[in-house]
Length: 364
View (cartoon, rainbow, N blue to C red):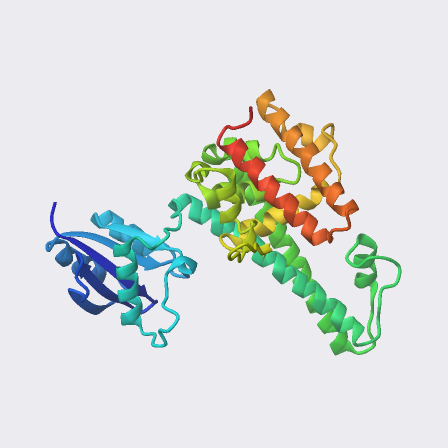
């Protein structure tokens, strides 16, 4: 066992600032800046490995996990640190790349960093594909708003029902404006909506194909046994979480999703606030959407029964218990006068606990 070096890295798209601490020494053994490219990283870390064993870390961010995978392949133990858990001194008003790298190295040596889960290459590709659908949906909402806003500025409103129904689309198609340029603008806006809707349909079909893969079929089927958890939500959970057993209990899984109450207690006073909103915001949003489905619960639903075909009786029974409990909770909180958003958040928190139980085989 050689000398252990702690390497902190502040990474951006052009360069990497590096600070190296050895043992309990306060001053860094080395500080440097290298180019953020594969060959430069290989050369630097191979030279550094000759001086002893390495543990490296960098902050999770938009640059993903390519650096982690490169260092791991070199034989360097690497940690991708959760940004919200990196300790900072309140009085420190100077921020540079070199200082950030040194702060990371010190936190790594002191054991003060929380590592994020690094997905496999397949999971990361699936996750990006799923998030692309959310981006397309957001673009589609904006495109629809542009159409309605364009017509509203000309005092043209659809008053025969809800927008974007088949009747509304037929009305839009038949609408003729006096000015040829305005008519062309409306046509282009409508074409953009049609194009984005076709993209969403194509991506959804691709999601069903991904969910049928051997590596995803079984866990996705388990999650779809629960009402409100369709293929998109189930596959998102599987690809984003990976191994659910890395959470020791349902409470840890809820905390990871940011669905637990915040707290600022001192002395004899206990103060609870809104949910922390820490961790994975994408999954939290999806589970809140799923929780709205528990305004009612019917185990004999045709769609639900079809999704449960071939699953173990114990899992189906567990999902039914969850459905009845969550429905009762939803109605009880509503009748107590709680705001609907508060209610659905509470239901989403409990739903996440049931999903964790299903994925770690605690369905008895």
